[in-house]
Length: 187
Image (tube, rainbow, N blue to C red; front, side):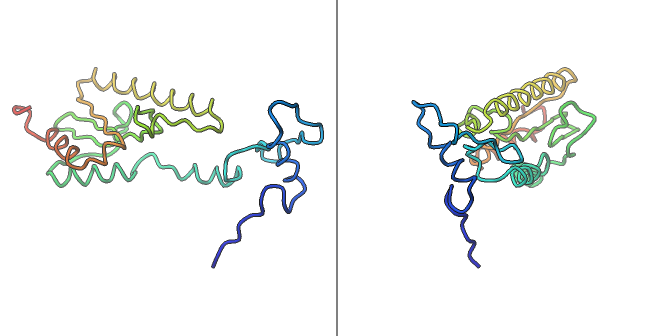
């Protein structure tokens, strides 16, 4: 059951030859009129770096989850193992925190480094394709996060943010979570 790889760009379809020529045009010379090709249906540019077509890319992006992510599940298991009891995604709180410990008035957000613009290597990476869209998208997410944090703090909630990259250091995360669950007199 081996998958056949698609033919190299330009082989097998006449439009591919023109797209290949458009991508390989020298930056010092303007492209010839023959190499100027309108994008195929679906709006994909001839020099797109995306490995998927628009329909497949759309299907992949639809599968990106907002709740119940792997880092969130790992943190929930950790908190539960330490004896913490929580509620999930409370819609009545600003920002709909991922994990809420109501008795402690603690709201925990589990943020993906890329989606929320963390300053780690994964979060600092900006895709080359459609760069303006992604920069604006992450900026909107960041601004929305800030508003939610301010509103929760104003309502008297303690807010913690756990970044995806912090999940790699299990010992440090366990110590941090244990600190959240200590009685308030010991904090």
